[in-house]
Image (cartoon, rainbow, N blue to C red; front, side, top):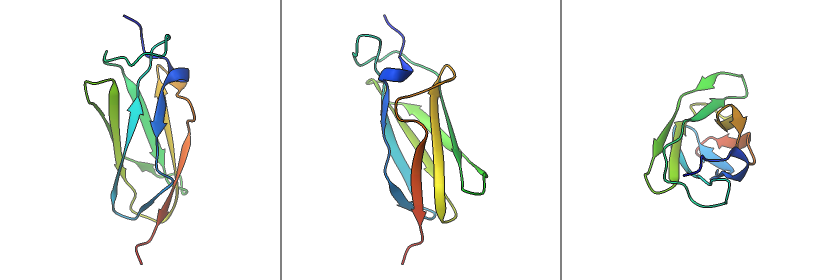
Length: 103
């Protein structure tokens, strides 16, 4: 069994969301041989608003080699989401999500 590798793990993060709406996206865990890994792993996700307020986020193991991340931004602006495994950012991290007001 191989550990998940940050440089091989990707997230499908949306470019934008609406204020107060839960945004969910999926992480695909890959090992050093670029195979889906169903082994559990300790991801860390940190989301910050453009005012540097921390936005709570959750990560759930889907037990199929993917993980679901969710968060809710309560103000407009840009949210920076950093995702890491063992202290190393995954491929493409940090991600920026634009938060818009519903109109």
